Structure formats: C-alpha cells, structure tokens
Length: 341
Image (cartoon, rainbow, N blue to C red; front, side, top):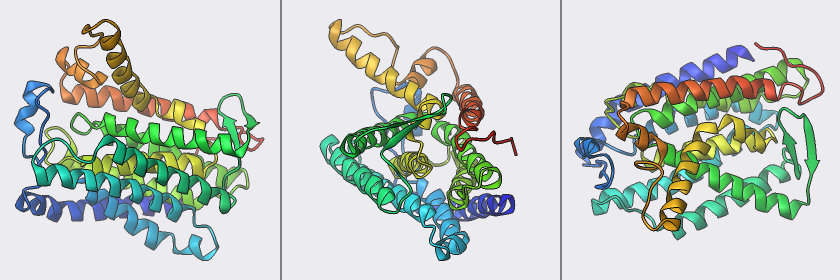
C-alpha cells in the first residue's frame, strides 16, 4: 500500500513537471495571460499577462496516475479513484470554460455566477447519487472527534451534500489569490487523505487503497506544480485548476463517507470564505464601512505588509497542522485506534 502511494506521488510529480515545461511556453504563445483585477492590490498589476490555466499540468499528471496506477483497483471493481477523478474533471471543465471566456475577452469576467452555480449543483448531485449507487455513501454524517454517526433522510442529505460541495469548491477557488497559496494549502489536505486511506486499509480492514492512490497523485501533482507556481509565479492554475482542486477535495471526503471532515481539514478555505462574507455583509449593514482592508483575508494581510511568501508559509503551516489534527480526529472511525504510519 505504502509503495503504491509513493509511486502515485512520484509519478504524478514527474508527469506534471514534464507537462509544465512545455505547457507554459505554449500558453505564452497562445497569449493565455491572466487579466488582473483593477480593484486588487496595486502591485498585482505587475502579474498582468502571466500565463493562466496552468492547472492543466497537474490535472494531466493526476489523471495519468489514476488511469495507469488504478488499473488493478478497477479490475477488482473499486472505481472510487475514477469517480473522484471524473467529478474533479467536471469542475475543472467548468473552470476551463470560465478561463477561456476570460482569455478570449481579455477581461477578468468569465461565465456568469448563475451559469457556474447551475453547473456546480448539477455536478454535485451527480457525484452524491453515483457514490450512493455504488454503495460507497450512506445518508448519514460521521462527526470527527466525537466518533458518532447521525442518520438523516436521504433528500435532506442530498441537499446538504450539494450545499457542502458547492460551498467548498468555491472556497478553494477563493483561496487561489496569492502565488502558490492554494497549491500549498491543498498539499497537506491531499497528504492527510492519503495517510488516512493507508491507515484504514492497513489497520482497520477497510480497503481505501484506490482513494489513497488518487490522494497521493493529487499531492504529487501539486508539488510538481508548485515549482512553477511559487512566488514569483511563472504560471497561475486559473479556475481550471482551482475548481478541479475544489472538486477533488470534496469528492475525496465524500468517497470516504465523511464530508464533515472538511470542517477541520479545510479551515483555511473556510476562513478565506468567511472573511469575504463578513466583509460584504458588514459593508452593506454599515453603508460602506469595512472590517478588512480588503477581502478575502490574504489580501488584507498583503495590505497590512505581509509578503506573498510569508502568507504562503503561514497558511500552509496552518493547513499542515489541521491535517495532522484531522488524522487523529478520525482514528476511531472503525472502532479501533489507527496508529500513525
């Protein structure tokens, strides 16, 4: 199991790097440059024209490893890694359509909010119903730390699941606002999923090898992408990459039948989103006053004097700490303590 995870990580890392070396020049030739918001931090204007849609490189790396490395699991009837991948690709496609519109029209506007919402709701419903049909999901909520499961009616579960998925996917998208930030924050999330999958498979009799394969490939692909995306970024992942990542983070939690794990594990995503919501509500209630210098919170920190590398380091460290905490939060999931490693 451990060897398979290492192979998935390394393979995805190498494919991503190789693809990146040719993709970035291709994006430049296509003039697929990012259009920077005029209302953002002024120094971000220097990033105008940096190639976007770079998420394609780790999408290729992850897809390659899931298809090649997951043949054995598929032959045994376990398609969870493919279900997660297809769902992630569906959201990645939504992001690609959004990016394409932005690049074509040379402005920071893509699909309308309603178009993206409708597509996301449809994709979320498909994931939940497919996982339930395959027997990997039941209408109940496992609560981390408390080690209890609460059963709820399926229609309510479906509605709640769609809300969680759409909310989380967009939270991941919001986090992609500083060089390397979304990449760095998501690597510990992916590694946590891989560690939980390996531990459950080895110590509890529950086989989550295929989920571990996807998670390790996700971590490897993002690590390879970080080479190009770390400040100063040579390429941005675009909505193509960030929506793919949001889909991957959500789909993996649901494939492991524990969507509420996203609360501790996705703390950074939640904080970013809440800062945005609080800013908008406070602005409207006070007729123009602001709590943050700019939302989401990573921009507030920038305007407060934090450099992009410092934001990356602190947020990634917090994500890593929450990943370790989350691991222990689910250790009693199957009735016995799951040791580290």
